[in-house]
Structure formats: C-alpha cells, structure tokens
Length: 117
Image 1 (cartoon, rainbow, N blue to C red):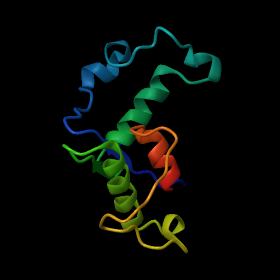
Image 2 (image 1 turned 120 degrees about the horizontal axis):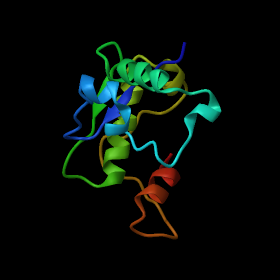
Image 3 (image 1 turned 30 degrees about the vertical axis):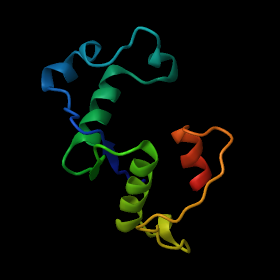
Image 4 (image 1 turned 90 degrees about the horizontal axis):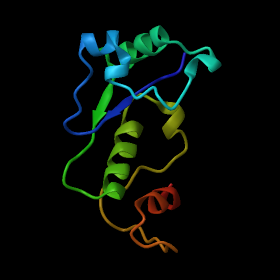
C-alpha cells in the first residue's frame, strides 16, 4: 500500500459531515464528470474521510514565509518521517541558507522549487 502524508494549509478546516454527505456544497463538481472515470460521489467521500482521518499523518504548512521556504520545509519534514524510500541515498536537506539558484523567471516560486529539487 502507498504511504500518504497530507499537507494542510494554515487555517484548513476539514469538511463537516453534512458537507461530505452533500459534496456539491464542498466541491465544485460542475466542470467535471468523474463518473466517466468510474469515480462516484461515495468514492470521493470515502477517500476524503481516509485522507482527513487520524490514521493519515499530516503536515501543517508554515505561515509568513515564501512558497520556496514552505516547499523546503515540507520536503524536509517528509524526509524526516519514516519514509526511507524518499531519503535513501540523498544528502540531508540543509537547515540554513546556502543554495544558489539562477532562474529565468525571478520571483516564480514554482520554477525555483522545481530547480531546487
């Protein structure tokens, strides 16, 4: 079975039970037809319950820092967890500044994160 860790944004509030019973109040299902992929509302409900339940570990993102710092913090946290397949053979994530990155798109956090991997 796959190991799963969820990442929660600060202030994330899990859907209430009545929202899970009426997914259209929580998820915008207008622009998609998941049934064509054999994914039905009950499948979504069961998956959300599992992802948001106590048995699935989660990381809460930091507040007040740039996306690239958040990405590094989340990566570091994942590597600390008991997930040897992620950290096998990799050097430890540095805990301080020192990374030099030259980017064609300065200020693009997604490009910086991808280049920093």
